Image (cartoon, rainbow, N blue to C red; front, side, top):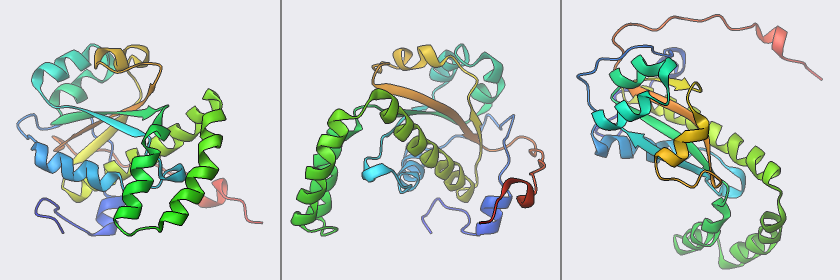
Length: 212
């Protein structure tokens, strides 16, 4: 485990996760630890390994105050949390293809021939992909990294809450991002719970699963 990680107990991480409403505002998370958590989260899978997720970490009081106006129904969670991570998905994620595949060759993860084969196959596909198809792909990938981030936070002893109630039409521009390129996915508040979250009922597997 890293110096920051508190547990690697899988059951504690998965079964102990709750969506937290209020946090201890005195708890701060260092940029070093936040960087470590985000790095671990980015080990999540993504289509063609394009890693289309982008993060904006809002952890200053000024930043959270600004965000609270965009997330009025979640203001208490925003203001009491240690930080809120705004998750975006990058419509132009394939711009990083050369760097991703080139570095994989440099590190010995794949041979040059495999890189050339994959880029030759995927470049025309991505160049002609419709905006609708691109959005579908990157929203799925950004959802995967978001869930992984919440589980990583649990391993570090923190609690989280995924939030969709905010002004999605405004948030990219507020944080200086191209709103046509960066698609807002969710906000994730993170910190130390001030009170225990509630357990919630889950539908039986028999209700939601079909065997063929």
